[in-house]
Length: 134
Image: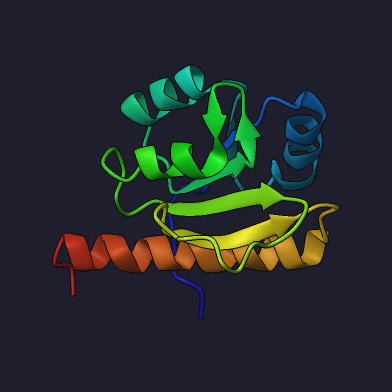
């Protein structure tokens, strides 16, 4: 049973490929509030001022790798769910960024929708635990 949220979950999608940002927004704009960022600096600015539930980042974003960026977000929003967009999954990669799942291009919209829903539910559970609301 999905957890209930009064507002649309907020997703920060950081990618320097504008086409990816546009297509993601077109698919999921009805169910999620999507904030796009095309640089690490812009994405960090969003995290400092907005309550974000899910962070999606491309494998590389301008100044650094997506993994390094996601690891950097751990201190800013420890309960956020982190997703990495890539062309392939590297199973041997150290998960220093606590990546919840990998989004493999090209996207399967149905599968991606399920991953986002699971991520939202996990975020809500983490928030409940963190805030002792049980």
